[in-house]
Amino acid sequence: MKEITRINHIGLRVRDLAISRDFYAQLGFKFLAGPVGPEPAAIVEHPSGVNINFILNTSADAPLDNILMKKDMKYPGYTHVALEITDAKSVSDQLENLGITITERVEFNGAKFFFIRDPDDNVIEFHQPASS
Image 1: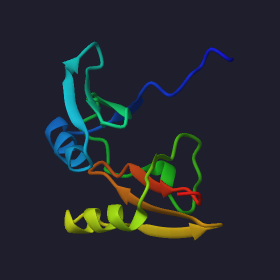
Image 2 (image 1 turned 45 degrees about the vertical axis):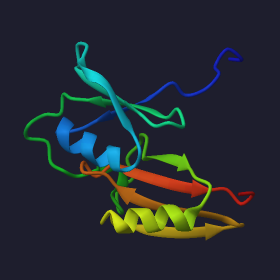
Image 3 (image 1 turned 120 degrees about the vertical axis):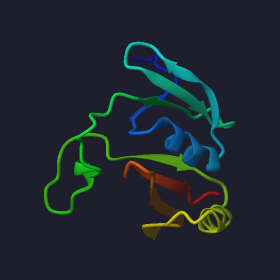
């Protein structure tokens, strides 16, 4: 469909709005609104235009375990979001200064990318293309 122009937002189910809001604020996301709507959701946005809707309906007894990232069993579904960056070393240093653990680093054909986990065990990739 040629009418699709970009991703509008990412829906991300979280346990605790305050904890997620604080974590993503460290990455530069600004709180816009919420909770709003029937789910309900809260909205944060990065100055780059990346928009995340925190979905606030997590079951109270849900384990803190991202089943999509299990090593042995491979479940279908979205596994991570990749945020494009211009300077992998700078971002890596900033994350480490914030006390955020980088779980994996990869270099492939000139591209550099690394991964972190948010407070709900969701995977975030930071990706510097080979051309940057």
